[in-house]
Image (cartoon, rainbow, N blue to C red):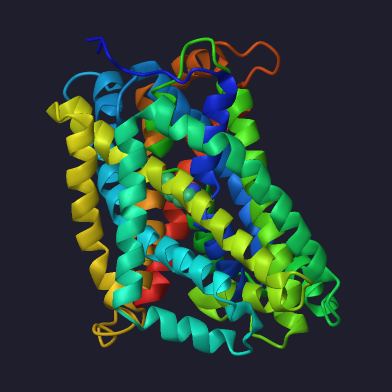
Length: 448
Ligand code: PHE
């Protein structure tokens, strides 16, 4: 059963940083602010925080332990732990499919970020019409395609190099720099004149705004931002050794991830209001608002350049975890060679990412429920696949793998704060019905 060549993280910090690198990405800086803006601001922030702690943390613990216990990719992990020949491995397979889907459009957006590095270097921060610049960029074909390809090539390159040399090395330096730069941005944003309205919008919840969709969007965002519901944390957990501390590691990952999202919101909303923009502008929000903030700063062009470099890096440390899920599956279950797997899957992902990329130009007529193709990919992945994956993972943990055994696994190597009965209650009785009901109502409302 034991595969001989499987790598392990070479240090505790290595794992935490890799998992945090997976968690922190476009989801925090690009997706979180615009979803918050579409869902009424502060009330969404509040529900999102509740979802991250009550649903995200237990599922994060579960996924990491599933990985460490089995030392397998998501399909192999469910197979190894499910008794008999039950079809639980399908949950892992759904995860592999979801990772593939997310990566295809994630790379398109990361490509926008890369293009913005070049734009910043060429002095576009001095321009006034940032919305115009954004629309012009995404409705082009050549440039977005080029950067989508470059981004996938980088992702494939790192994954080909393997877990330790590739992933672990890349994240160590870059995460702290991103954090510092965000702090500078927040400072500039909240000191703009007129920023107060943005702070109120972002921090003073209006409870009348809650709908089933708000709740579902919050759960979806909690899964997306923590890289849950599709096996990324199972896969990263599979490279853990027995004396690693899962409870602590998960806590650090969650804390850092939430902090970055909150800072991103603090950088964006005060500026949105100070500059007279609209918080519900959708996916372009970050790309339109932040350049406007840079324009208001001394050395703005330099900061803008640095910011998009770091955003791209944050995207890379996430995209590698998406690709790793699919690659680990092909390597473990179908004996593909790692490099070959990374390359072939990378090419297919690139191709699958072309329709969402063209959704702002050649394919702009194609709509689903009023959404363009990229939003449609994002909707299926986040509103359906991730919550379903998370729901089934919780049911599996609570009723198939049995919570006592998981608790043994979680608490192995964990000496200080033992995870206990609250975990059982959440994973068995609260999380599954909560996700199921909220998802059902929200989807029903979407279609009816
Ligand atoms: N967590 C990443 C982000 O917030 C996205 C991601 C989702 C990565 C699922 C891996 C798996 O950008």
